[in-house]
Image 1 (spheres, rainbow, N blue to C red):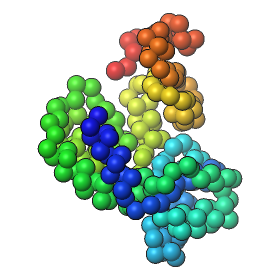
Image 2: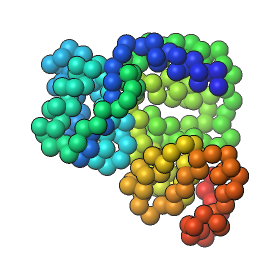
Image 3: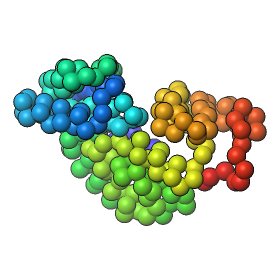
Length: 211
């Protein structure tokens, strides 16, 4: 938790920027838009969150972000929604935070993971301390590959997803990526304590639940 807090402080200390969700335009087109806007504005803007088919979040310096948002709409985006943040997460503007976090992680004991965690950096599982450290650092500046992460888990036979924490945003994204998956959102400790697949309203598939 100390690392989580420090990570937030480091991100807040990075150069200011912004983020915006673009709906209805593919990643390849948006990547080209970001490249052109970055060149035109001499400031970075990138595809930061690959959330779901047709939903990509851009992040970068404000002038480049606004330019990319405008050009995305000109190329057919259905809607652009600015996010209520003043940082550019998962973008090059987080480089200073990544460097300091790497130094902190180098001094932190990390044990091999008992359960593989699918990293949103690579959309593949990590288990060993060195790769866990690397993924945590890269996560600050790399795109969040949510679509690929869910698709990977689905390809491994995962059929049930539980979102733990306030809100249902991730559950909604999973339903778009994997329409046949069983998805449940648990927003607080009481919901977690009461939960069982037998009473969730979901049809439990045969076999043990995936780890």
